[in-house]
Length: 147
Image (cartoon, rainbow, N blue to C red; front, side, top):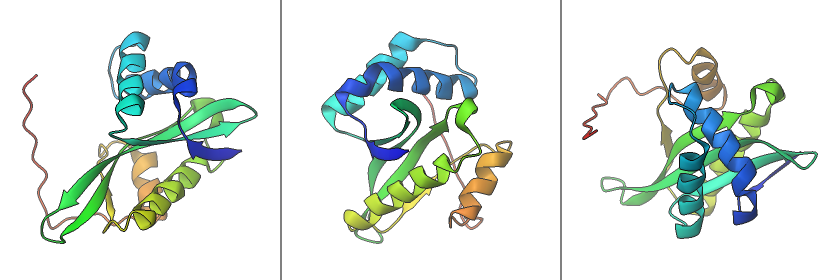
């Protein structure tokens, strides 16, 4: 098992994982949209994607976006996407991907990393607490969407 940077040669396999991730969150399957989106992220280098590879098979990924904290005057990272193929769950791959994300935070001198998950995501909520994230009950989360 290997955690490594995603690259353009991973697009086909990574797109399948990303499509499954989107379907997990209630989106319709659309492998072409998944492929376009992931290809764009890799080609423009506007996110950091790590993949989990086991026996030449991509079984998971984590995607982070750079942010900046004005009050901390520092870079920060948004852990936006984390997914492990359902056939590979329970093997600790999510924790390894999170640990790789933590390395990115440290290596870029960022002040931290944040994430959001649905309250109904019991496994994810347990995972994040188990890997050192703290739930922030002091802030409100608001969202405005145009679509």
